[in-house]
Amino acid sequence: MTVTGPIWRDQLAVAERAVLGRSDDGLAGARPDVLVVGGGIVGVTTAFACAEAGLGEVLLIETGRLGAGATGGATGLLIPEPHQWSDPEPFVDLERASLERWRDLQQALPGGVGLVELDWLGLAPHDSGFAAHQPRDVEWLNPGQVAQLVPGLTRPMEGALIRRQARVNPLRAVARLAARLPAVATGVAATAVDISGDRVVSVATSSGHISPGVVVFATGQPPVLDGLPLHIPSDRVKGHLLVTQQTDVTLPGIVAPVATQIENGQLLAGGTFDVGDESPAVQPAVIDAITAGLAAVLPRLGGVGVAYQWCCFRPRHPDRRPVIDKVPGLVNAWLTSGHFRTGILNAPATAAVLSRWIAQGVPPTDARSWSATRFGAR
Ligand SMILES: Cc1cc2nc3c(=O)[nH]c(=O)nc-3n(C[C@H](O)[C@H](O)[C@H](O)COP(=O)(O)OP(=O)(O)OC[C@H]3O[C@@H](n4cnc5c(N)ncnc54)[C@H](O)[C@@H]3O)c2cc1C
Image (cartoon, rainbow, N blue to C red; front, side):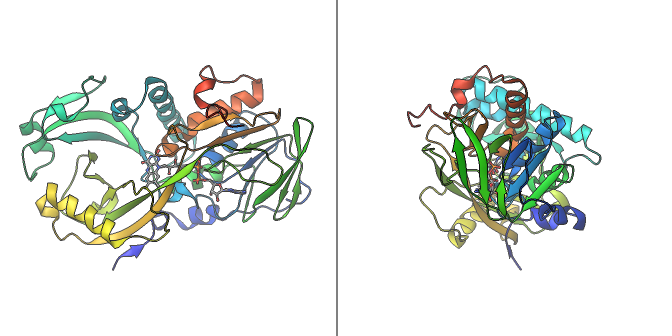
């Protein structure tokens, strides 16, 4: 039987699941020092960083359950180094810094955040299958070495091995972090803001008004709230994922573009870019294409059963980089959006940027890269 929905929730302990629906009392009339709107990985890590930085009372609100958006459907890979082939250096630097922060969180939280260290192996029929420049920390493997790591490939392939990348169950990370937040209210939507001069003085929510000292919008896509004059171009890109039934094929970590070894002998595959598909439904043809792709590379996976299948949407700005900025024209409101395909990875670094900016008034050195106005829109 195939479950339609992410595997992540089923991997959680009962107490972790309960945290995803955490809702503390006393919201009406609240006056937190920091209000974070949005309970995905970026909002939760931001609230955590603000609380850690001693910014006073921190309240996070989320319209559904924590992790209900893109976060709960992500693959959860934390792989900065392979992005050297696709992303500019400042972006890879942010990703590297963020993976280090994930490791710090893993150490700092009792029980960690569920970070799993693992290697990344990129397969190419020949080494010119990779871009010309040679990223650091790559071991180039010949077909014999690749075959030792991944026996049974359809044809000989060169490989690029990068050690010490990582992954998380994104919902477990959210639950572990959220359990340590001072105040969380799920099932509460921000609907409007009241602005006086250059300050947000009040945020209207489905559970009453909140008067925050500072507000951070971490709503996946840019926030759409009455009274908030924001027009940042964005869209979203659907992706499908599946988890196989238990198989006797064991992969040495992440084998791109094939699959990632996860718990219980299961493989996680997919991460398609289904541009233009706005339907929230899983498309059986896409799932079939993913399983056919598995069998094409590793014939032993032919006919493997699908235990979980799901899809979700990546929030995206036109240049595929996130916004991490103050809301233009306001002195006490920040936003971060459009984390596209690396929001799980980049959440802790984003949170660190925001909490430092709020605490010390210091924007990041590369602020222009993440600016809300770089698209020419206000
Ligand atoms: C198929 C797929 C695979 C992916 N794989 C990876 C990966 O391997 N590694 C990686 O780093 N990233 C990956 N991503 C990307 C990652 O999922 C996103 O970049 C990340 O989850 C974005 O997090 P977020 O907190 O910004 O947004 P979200 O998770 O969407 O959270 C935003 C939250 O804000 C809430 N919200 C919105 N409006 C309001 C409001 N008005 N009031 C209250 N709450 C509100 C929403 O309900 C939502 O829960 C993948 C994405 C997909 C779709």
